Image (cartoon, rainbow, N blue to C red; front, side, top):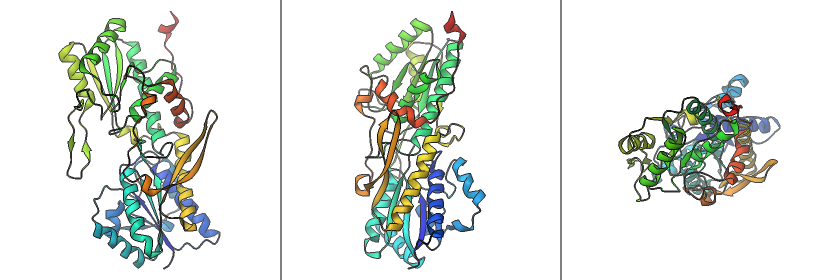
Length: 392
Protein backbone atom coordinates (compact mmCIF):
# COMPACT_ATOMS: atom_id res chain seq x y z
CA UNK A 1 0.00 0.00 0.00
CA UNK A 2 1.29 3.44 -0.99
CA UNK A 3 -0.31 5.41 1.87
CA UNK A 4 -2.29 7.59 -0.50
CA UNK A 5 -5.16 9.77 0.73
CA UNK A 6 -8.59 10.55 -0.70
CA UNK A 7 -11.28 13.13 0.12
CA UNK A 8 -15.01 12.80 -0.52
CA UNK A 9 -17.88 15.30 -0.38
CA UNK A 10 -21.42 14.05 0.17
CA UNK A 11 -24.90 15.56 0.26
CA UNK A 12 -25.95 19.18 -0.21
CA UNK A 13 -23.17 21.75 -0.27
CA UNK A 14 -22.77 24.70 2.11
CA UNK A 15 -20.96 28.04 2.08
CA UNK A 16 -18.00 26.43 3.87
CA UNK A 17 -17.78 22.83 2.66
CA UNK A 18 -14.84 23.90 0.48
CA UNK A 19 -13.23 25.54 3.51
CA UNK A 20 -13.11 22.14 5.19
CA UNK A 21 -11.53 20.77 2.01
CA UNK A 22 -9.04 23.65 2.17
CA UNK A 23 -8.16 22.74 5.77
CA UNK A 24 -7.77 19.08 4.88
CA UNK A 25 -5.63 19.71 1.79
CA UNK A 26 -3.31 22.24 3.43
CA UNK A 27 -2.85 20.00 6.48
CA UNK A 28 -2.08 16.97 4.30
CA UNK A 29 0.45 18.90 2.22
CA UNK A 30 2.03 20.38 5.35
CA UNK A 31 2.38 16.99 7.03
CA UNK A 32 3.73 15.43 3.86
CA UNK A 33 6.35 18.19 3.55
CA UNK A 34 7.34 17.55 7.16
CA UNK A 35 7.95 13.87 6.43
CA UNK A 36 4.63 12.20 7.23
CA UNK A 37 4.01 8.95 5.38
CA UNK A 38 1.54 10.34 2.84
CA UNK A 39 1.71 9.43 -0.84
CA UNK A 40 -0.60 10.90 -3.44
CA UNK A 41 -3.52 13.10 -2.40
CA UNK A 42 -6.72 12.50 -4.34
CA UNK A 43 -10.28 13.78 -4.29
CA UNK A 44 -13.28 11.89 -5.63
CA UNK A 45 -14.97 13.96 -8.34
CA UNK A 46 -18.71 13.69 -7.72
CA UNK A 47 -18.78 11.85 -4.41
CA UNK A 48 -18.88 8.09 -3.92
CA UNK A 49 -20.57 7.52 -7.28
CA UNK A 50 -17.81 9.40 -9.04
CA UNK A 51 -15.20 7.36 -7.22
CA UNK A 52 -16.82 4.07 -8.23
CA UNK A 53 -16.67 5.32 -11.83
CA UNK A 54 -12.97 6.11 -11.49
CA UNK A 55 -13.38 9.88 -11.55
CA UNK A 56 -10.52 11.27 -9.43
CA UNK A 57 -8.67 14.57 -9.07
CA UNK A 58 -4.96 14.75 -8.26
CA UNK A 59 -5.00 17.50 -5.64
CA UNK A 60 -1.27 18.16 -5.91
CA UNK A 61 -1.70 19.12 -9.57
CA UNK A 62 -3.63 22.21 -8.42
CA UNK A 63 -1.87 25.52 -7.80
CA UNK A 64 -1.71 27.25 -4.42
CA UNK A 65 -3.83 30.05 -5.90
CA UNK A 66 -6.54 27.57 -6.84
CA UNK A 67 -6.48 26.01 -3.37
CA UNK A 68 -6.84 29.44 -1.76
CA UNK A 69 -10.04 30.06 -3.73
CA UNK A 70 -11.70 27.19 -1.86
CA UNK A 71 -12.28 29.47 1.12
CA UNK A 72 -14.54 31.77 -0.89
CA UNK A 73 -16.17 29.30 -3.27
CA UNK A 74 -19.68 27.96 -2.58
CA UNK A 75 -20.95 24.58 -3.72
CA UNK A 76 -18.40 21.75 -3.83
CA UNK A 77 -15.25 22.28 -5.87
CA UNK A 78 -14.83 18.50 -6.21
CA UNK A 79 -18.50 17.74 -6.72
CA UNK A 80 -20.86 15.93 -4.40
CA UNK A 81 -23.73 13.46 -4.61
CA UNK A 82 -26.43 11.55 -2.77
CA UNK A 83 -25.75 8.22 -4.48
CA UNK A 84 -27.49 5.25 -2.94
CA UNK A 85 -24.92 2.54 -2.25
CA UNK A 86 -25.62 -1.18 -1.99
CA UNK A 87 -23.52 -3.54 0.20
CA UNK A 88 -21.57 -4.68 -2.86
CA UNK A 89 -20.67 -1.04 -3.62
CA UNK A 90 -18.93 -0.71 -0.26
CA UNK A 91 -16.96 -3.89 -0.94
CA UNK A 92 -16.01 -2.55 -4.37
CA UNK A 93 -14.79 0.68 -2.81
CA UNK A 94 -12.35 -1.28 -0.65
CA UNK A 95 -11.11 -3.11 -3.75
CA UNK A 96 -10.53 0.25 -5.45
CA UNK A 97 -8.83 1.70 -2.35
CA UNK A 98 -6.36 -1.17 -2.45
CA UNK A 99 -5.76 -0.83 -6.19
CA UNK A 100 -5.05 2.90 -5.77
CA UNK A 101 -2.86 2.41 -2.72
CA UNK A 102 -5.21 4.45 -0.53
CA UNK A 103 -4.69 4.15 3.20
CA UNK A 104 -6.44 7.33 4.38
CA UNK A 105 -10.09 8.07 3.60
CA UNK A 106 -11.80 11.32 4.68
CA UNK A 107 -15.50 12.00 4.06
CA UNK A 108 -17.14 15.40 4.54
CA UNK A 109 -20.92 15.55 4.84
CA UNK A 110 -24.08 15.37 6.93
CA UNK A 111 -26.07 12.56 8.51
CA UNK A 112 -26.31 10.50 5.35
CA UNK A 113 -22.63 10.90 4.55
CA UNK A 114 -21.67 9.97 8.11
CA UNK A 115 -23.75 6.81 7.66
CA UNK A 116 -21.74 6.11 4.51
CA UNK A 117 -18.56 6.92 6.42
CA UNK A 118 -19.46 4.38 9.11
CA UNK A 119 -20.21 1.68 6.56
CA UNK A 120 -16.94 2.31 4.70
CA UNK A 121 -15.11 2.17 8.05
CA UNK A 122 -16.65 -1.22 8.81
CA UNK A 123 -15.64 -2.57 5.40
CA UNK A 124 -12.10 -1.22 5.82
CA UNK A 125 -11.46 -2.67 9.28
CA UNK A 126 -9.50 -5.67 8.01
CA UNK A 127 -7.78 -3.79 5.18
CA UNK A 128 -5.64 -1.45 7.28
CA UNK A 129 -7.39 1.61 5.85
CA UNK A 130 -8.21 4.49 8.22
CA UNK A 131 -11.50 6.38 7.77
CA UNK A 132 -12.48 9.76 9.24
CA UNK A 133 -15.53 12.00 9.02
CA UNK A 134 -15.84 15.79 8.78
CA UNK A 135 -19.27 17.23 9.73
CA UNK A 136 -21.11 19.43 7.26
CA UNK A 137 -24.68 20.64 7.15
CA UNK A 138 -26.54 23.92 6.99
CA UNK A 139 -29.42 22.15 8.77
CA UNK A 140 -27.37 21.70 11.97
CA UNK A 141 -29.02 18.35 12.61
CA UNK A 142 -25.90 16.20 13.16
CA UNK A 143 -25.92 14.55 16.59
CA UNK A 144 -23.42 15.07 19.44
CA UNK A 145 -21.44 18.01 18.01
CA UNK A 146 -22.39 21.45 19.40
CA UNK A 147 -23.01 22.63 15.84
CA UNK A 148 -21.90 21.72 12.34
CA UNK A 149 -19.83 23.76 9.89
CA UNK A 150 -22.23 25.21 7.35
CA UNK A 151 -24.85 26.20 9.90
CA UNK A 152 -23.22 29.45 11.01
CA UNK A 153 -23.24 30.85 7.47
CA UNK A 154 -26.84 29.76 6.85
CA UNK A 155 -27.79 31.31 10.20
CA UNK A 156 -26.09 34.57 9.25
CA UNK A 157 -27.90 34.60 5.91
CA UNK A 158 -31.26 34.19 7.64
CA UNK A 159 -30.54 36.78 10.35
CA UNK A 160 -29.20 39.46 8.02
CA UNK A 161 -31.62 38.96 5.13
CA UNK A 162 -34.64 38.88 7.47
CA UNK A 163 -33.38 42.07 9.16
CA UNK A 164 -33.43 43.69 5.72
CA UNK A 165 -36.97 42.45 5.08
CA UNK A 166 -38.03 43.78 8.48
CA UNK A 167 -36.63 47.21 7.53
CA UNK A 168 -38.55 47.15 4.26
CA UNK A 169 -41.81 46.16 5.95
CA UNK A 170 -41.33 48.80 8.64
CA UNK A 171 -40.95 51.47 5.96
CA UNK A 172 -44.25 50.55 4.30
CA UNK A 173 -46.47 48.57 6.71
CA UNK A 174 -49.13 47.37 4.29
CA UNK A 175 -48.77 43.60 4.14
CA UNK A 176 -47.71 40.37 5.82
CA UNK A 177 -44.47 38.80 4.56
CA UNK A 178 -43.92 35.06 5.00
CA UNK A 179 -40.31 33.87 4.69
CA UNK A 180 -39.60 30.17 4.26
CA UNK A 181 -36.37 28.65 5.55
CA UNK A 182 -34.62 25.42 4.61
CA UNK A 183 -33.69 22.91 7.29
CA UNK A 184 -35.76 19.84 6.49
CA UNK A 185 -37.30 18.41 9.68
CA UNK A 186 -35.20 20.52 12.06
CA UNK A 187 -35.85 24.17 12.88
CA UNK A 188 -32.32 25.47 13.39
CA UNK A 189 -32.15 27.57 10.20
CA UNK A 190 -35.57 29.17 10.64
CA UNK A 191 -34.80 29.89 14.29
CA UNK A 192 -31.69 31.88 13.34
CA UNK A 193 -33.93 34.52 11.77
CA UNK A 194 -34.59 35.70 15.34
CA UNK A 195 -31.11 37.23 15.38
CA UNK A 196 -32.33 39.85 12.91
CA UNK A 197 -32.99 41.92 16.05
CA UNK A 198 -29.23 42.48 16.32
CA UNK A 199 -29.41 44.84 13.32
CA UNK A 200 -31.47 47.29 15.37
CA UNK A 201 -34.71 47.51 13.37
CA UNK A 202 -36.47 44.50 14.88
CA UNK A 203 -36.90 40.87 14.04
CA UNK A 204 -39.60 38.54 12.75
CA UNK A 205 -42.91 38.66 14.59
CA UNK A 206 -43.56 34.93 14.38
CA UNK A 207 -41.32 31.88 13.82
CA UNK A 208 -42.76 28.41 13.21
CA UNK A 209 -40.55 25.34 13.57
CA UNK A 210 -41.11 21.61 12.86
CA UNK A 211 -40.58 20.89 16.56
CA UNK A 212 -43.54 23.10 17.57
CA UNK A 213 -46.69 22.14 15.59
CA UNK A 214 -49.28 24.93 15.58
CA UNK A 215 -52.99 25.35 14.90
CA UNK A 216 -54.31 27.12 11.83
CA UNK A 217 -56.71 29.17 13.91
CA UNK A 218 -54.01 30.14 16.39
CA UNK A 219 -51.81 31.24 13.51
CA UNK A 220 -54.59 33.26 11.90
CA UNK A 221 -55.37 34.91 15.24
CA UNK A 222 -51.71 36.00 15.51
CA UNK A 223 -51.83 37.43 12.00
CA UNK A 224 -55.04 39.30 12.77
CA UNK A 225 -53.35 40.75 15.85
CA UNK A 226 -50.38 41.97 13.79
CA UNK A 227 -52.69 43.59 11.24
CA UNK A 228 -54.69 45.29 13.98
CA UNK A 229 -51.60 46.52 15.83
CA UNK A 230 -49.35 47.64 12.98
CA UNK A 231 -50.90 46.67 9.63
CA UNK A 232 -47.94 44.41 8.86
CA UNK A 233 -45.83 41.52 10.05
CA UNK A 234 -42.91 39.23 9.20
CA UNK A 235 -43.46 35.50 9.61
CA UNK A 236 -40.69 32.91 9.27
CA UNK A 237 -41.65 29.28 8.68
CA UNK A 238 -39.45 26.22 8.35
CA UNK A 239 -40.00 24.08 5.25
CA UNK A 240 -40.76 21.11 7.53
CA UNK A 241 -43.25 22.90 9.79
CA UNK A 242 -46.45 21.07 10.76
CA UNK A 243 -49.92 21.89 11.95
CA UNK A 244 -51.09 20.41 15.24
CA UNK A 245 -53.13 17.76 13.42
CA UNK A 246 -49.84 16.25 12.21
CA UNK A 247 -50.06 17.44 8.61
CA UNK A 248 -47.30 19.44 6.97
CA UNK A 249 -47.98 23.11 6.30
CA UNK A 250 -47.25 22.16 2.69
CA UNK A 251 -47.64 18.53 1.51
CA UNK A 252 -44.42 16.54 1.52
CA UNK A 253 -43.62 13.39 -0.41
CA UNK A 254 -41.02 10.67 0.00
CA UNK A 255 -38.88 10.35 -3.08
CA UNK A 256 -37.45 7.21 -4.65
CA UNK A 257 -34.24 7.79 -2.72
CA UNK A 258 -36.13 7.68 0.59
CA UNK A 259 -35.65 11.37 1.29
CA UNK A 260 -38.62 13.56 2.17
CA UNK A 261 -39.27 16.28 -0.41
CA UNK A 262 -40.81 19.24 1.38
CA UNK A 263 -43.44 21.44 -0.19
CA UNK A 264 -43.65 25.22 -0.29
CA UNK A 265 -44.62 26.26 3.23
CA UNK A 266 -44.53 30.03 2.65
CA UNK A 267 -46.95 29.99 -0.32
CA UNK A 268 -49.23 27.68 1.69
CA UNK A 269 -49.40 30.16 4.59
CA UNK A 270 -49.82 33.03 2.14
CA UNK A 271 -52.87 31.32 0.64
CA UNK A 272 -54.27 30.54 4.10
CA UNK A 273 -54.06 34.21 5.13
CA UNK A 274 -55.53 35.44 1.85
CA UNK A 275 -58.39 32.93 1.95
CA UNK A 276 -59.29 33.39 5.62
CA UNK A 277 -58.41 37.05 6.27
CA UNK A 278 -58.24 38.63 2.84
CA UNK A 279 -55.13 40.69 3.59
CA UNK A 280 -52.21 41.38 1.24
CA UNK A 281 -49.40 38.83 1.65
CA UNK A 282 -45.99 38.35 0.07
CA UNK A 283 -43.95 35.18 0.36
CA UNK A 284 -40.19 34.71 0.04
CA UNK A 285 -38.14 31.52 0.00
CA UNK A 286 -34.58 31.51 1.27
CA UNK A 287 -33.69 28.40 -0.69
CA UNK A 288 -30.29 27.68 -2.19
CA UNK A 289 -29.26 31.28 -1.58
CA UNK A 290 -29.12 30.46 2.13
CA UNK A 291 -26.60 27.66 1.67
CA UNK A 292 -24.61 29.07 -1.25
CA UNK A 293 -24.10 32.71 -0.31
CA UNK A 294 -20.47 33.71 0.16
CA UNK A 295 -21.57 37.32 0.71
CA UNK A 296 -23.18 36.17 3.96
CA UNK A 297 -20.48 33.63 4.87
CA UNK A 298 -19.69 33.66 8.58
CA UNK A 299 -16.00 34.13 9.38
CA UNK A 300 -16.21 31.91 12.45
CA UNK A 301 -18.01 29.24 10.41
CA UNK A 302 -15.27 29.34 7.78
CA UNK A 303 -12.49 29.17 10.38
CA UNK A 304 -14.10 26.23 12.17
CA UNK A 305 -14.67 24.43 8.87
CA UNK A 306 -10.96 24.78 8.09
CA UNK A 307 -10.04 23.56 11.57
CA UNK A 308 -12.19 20.40 11.47
CA UNK A 309 -10.81 19.56 8.02
CA UNK A 310 -7.24 19.91 9.26
CA UNK A 311 -7.93 17.91 12.42
CA UNK A 312 -9.48 15.06 10.43
CA UNK A 313 -6.33 14.72 8.32
CA UNK A 314 -4.07 14.97 11.36
CA UNK A 315 -5.97 12.15 13.05
CA UNK A 316 -6.38 9.84 10.07
CA UNK A 317 -2.65 9.93 9.37
CA UNK A 318 -2.06 8.91 13.00
CA UNK A 319 -4.20 5.84 12.31
CA UNK A 320 -7.33 7.11 14.02
CA UNK A 321 -10.37 5.55 12.35
CA UNK A 322 -14.14 5.32 12.74
CA UNK A 323 -14.46 8.84 14.14
CA UNK A 324 -15.95 12.20 13.17
CA UNK A 325 -14.35 15.45 14.23
CA UNK A 326 -16.85 17.35 16.40
CA UNK A 327 -17.05 20.78 17.99
CA UNK A 328 -17.38 21.08 21.76
CA UNK A 329 -18.37 24.48 23.12
CA UNK A 330 -16.36 25.52 26.17
CA UNK A 331 -17.85 28.99 26.57
CA UNK A 332 -20.42 31.18 24.84
CA UNK A 333 -19.21 34.54 26.16
CA UNK A 334 -16.37 34.71 25.39
CA UNK A 335 -16.91 32.18 22.63
CA UNK A 336 -14.50 29.26 22.83
CA UNK A 337 -14.55 25.74 21.41
CA UNK A 338 -12.36 22.70 21.16
CA UNK A 339 -12.31 19.96 18.52
CA UNK A 340 -13.13 16.46 19.70
CA UNK A 341 -13.45 12.97 18.22
CA UNK A 342 -16.88 11.35 18.14
CA UNK A 343 -17.53 7.68 17.39
CA UNK A 344 -18.99 7.50 13.91
CA UNK A 345 -21.65 5.05 15.09
CA UNK A 346 -23.10 7.83 17.26
CA UNK A 347 -23.82 10.11 14.30
CA UNK A 348 -24.88 7.68 11.56
CA UNK A 349 -28.29 8.99 10.41
CA UNK A 350 -29.14 10.36 13.87
CA UNK A 351 -31.00 13.65 13.44
CA UNK A 352 -30.68 16.33 16.08
CA UNK A 353 -33.89 18.28 16.61
CA UNK A 354 -34.13 21.88 17.69
CA UNK A 355 -34.31 21.72 21.52
CA UNK A 356 -37.71 22.31 23.11
CA UNK A 357 -36.11 24.59 25.70
CA UNK A 358 -35.13 26.98 22.91
CA UNK A 359 -38.77 27.42 21.80
CA UNK A 360 -40.83 30.16 23.45
CA UNK A 361 -43.87 29.37 25.57
CA UNK A 362 -46.32 30.34 22.82
CA UNK A 363 -44.61 27.99 20.34
CA UNK A 364 -44.20 30.76 17.75
CA UNK A 365 -40.69 32.00 18.43
CA UNK A 366 -37.42 31.26 20.21
CA UNK A 367 -35.93 32.10 23.58
CA UNK A 368 -33.18 34.54 24.47
CA UNK A 369 -31.11 31.50 25.47
CA UNK A 370 -31.08 30.34 21.84
CA UNK A 371 -30.22 33.81 20.55
CA UNK A 372 -27.26 33.96 22.94
CA UNK A 373 -26.17 30.45 21.89
CA UNK A 374 -26.42 31.19 18.18
CA UNK A 375 -24.91 34.70 18.06
CA UNK A 376 -21.19 33.68 18.05
CA UNK A 377 -21.78 31.38 15.08
CA UNK A 378 -22.73 34.34 12.86
CA UNK A 379 -19.21 35.76 13.01
CA UNK A 380 -18.95 39.55 12.97
CA UNK A 381 -21.93 41.61 14.21
CA UNK A 382 -24.75 42.24 11.75
CA UNK A 383 -24.63 45.63 9.97
CA UNK A 384 -26.65 48.17 11.92
CA UNK A 385 -29.83 49.56 10.35
CA UNK A 386 -31.85 52.63 11.28
CA UNK A 387 -35.44 53.84 11.05
CA UNK A 388 -36.14 57.49 11.78
CA UNK A 389 -39.75 56.49 12.40
CA UNK A 390 -38.53 55.18 15.77
CA UNK A 391 -37.32 58.66 16.71
CA UNK A 392 -40.74 60.33 16.58
